[in-house]
Length: 127
Image (cartoon, rainbow, N blue to C red; front, side, top):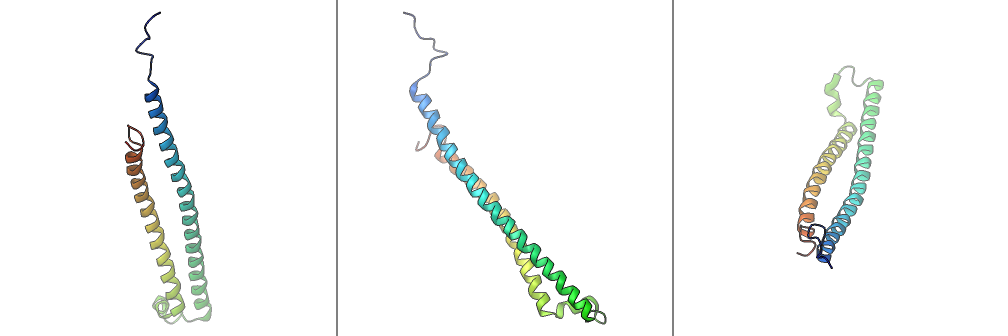
């Protein structure tokens, strides 16, 4: 009987270790994909609401122009309208929320990469 070739032989523990790491990474990435889908849905909803606020702002400015209240005062009269200030404030809030959302997504990605390195490092989970 001949001795096994050392270049092609492998140990069962090495294969199982690689399998554990692969399954750990797969589990983590599937969770990341799911959270990414939910984040995408939330971002689309925020953008849709921002578009609605911008449309409402445009309608209010059109109302003020039709009423003739901007003719004598010009653009300075826009700041006196409480409804217009409220709409502009909501639009600014939504813009800020979208920016926080994008920053949070980047931070979550970094945390995920660190967590995956700790959990599924080269020695497998729990090592």
